Length: 551
Image 1 (cartoon, rainbow, N blue to C red):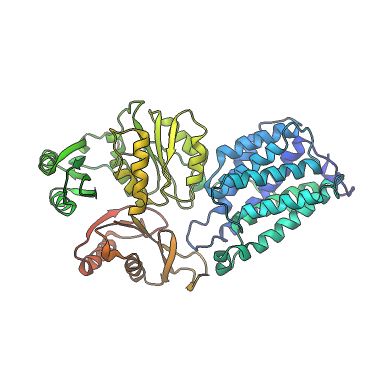
Image 2 (cartoon, rainbow, N blue to C red):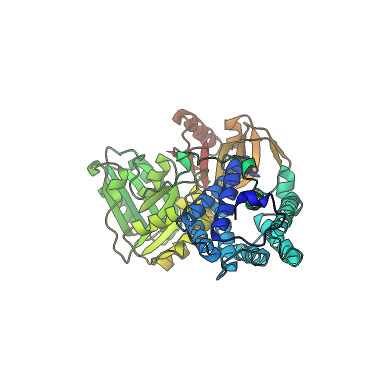
């Protein structure tokens, strides 16, 4: 079926597998042109509005797999697309899109051609798969848009049973209307004055498919894939060259068990005898991590406090390449390996020092794909694996990866860096997978997370008016304050977070913050709240000036 024929005939009854592939190719090109605009629809004006990027990269993976097929049978091409989407899914939007494509493929099972009836069934299966993929689906999202598109296809298939273009046009019109109504279904969209980004992406894909059927390929500028290095699969397992090498001392970690442990006293002793101190737990179990040249004294002090378990002492002077090389020792297959998604040299160092076996660089604006996560899982020499996504937009891809490996893999739904660190501190290498999942999950609600970034556009969230370039503060993922003074905004949101009732505050400052500036913030907090134990750590993370945990 030649594209030039489309303009000469008003009705197209069916298309084959190769034509289906070209439909999705053109849809991917149109999505590529609109990805930046879709990113800008992010409700929060933080530099992680990557819905368009995640959907585009998922579609690229989809089409890369489809390109390996030359079959004219529709079902075979659709199956290949489904495999590609599954492996390339990135972020929540990409995972949902992969499920939409999977459902679309299921609806075309055993079909040689795509006609109106097959299209309606495929869209219906796509919508069902999308809703099933979300435990608590919300209306006003891409779920609503694909469901509305499927419903109108089903309701109009009899009318257009000999006209694939006619049915597809009806579907696209309905998708557009559905996107425009998303703000009426989600108050947060209405307040921000935007439509749902994922829904817009679905509309663009459907529109691209229609454009192919209409033969309007000339109206869509065919673009070569952009070389965006920071968005390419960024898998690194246990070999992060960005981690600076320590030059002295021992990385010392242990667990103290007792009946009435005093964490403040333990922390004060550790701070007086070492650096990079982390002390977390309760009166019965406390985990200590520190860098010290007096590791024997540390163990003796711990024995004086109670029984000591899970002792780890690593000589940082003996490392060959970097900090990672020090702690990467073979893991017995029956032990549990920890994998974390982290970006920033300092944060990587913290996660490795607390027991991570592999790091997948990623986070805001750089969500790793399902395939990236799967590579990390397969890279560690253990059959039991725990994954810490450390970002709400990576949890879905991580969970999807667990079904693609023979290993026993569990995902702890850490939505930010502080939650990931808190979970790591609860890890017990002597215990099994299920016990660690239970104990590590309990810690997620014990820590509050503060993030400071800069607004990338003007918007309004509730009563908060935000201008592009303003500093914004988020508490547990919810935007609370904005303004043009970084120090003031950071201090204000810490007060909103009820820092006065905290015990330990960890300040991870990003690569746009000088150490002196971060130290000034730490001093101001300490002056007003002298009871707090404040840890200042060079996280090196991009985009976020501060990531702060309060325990």
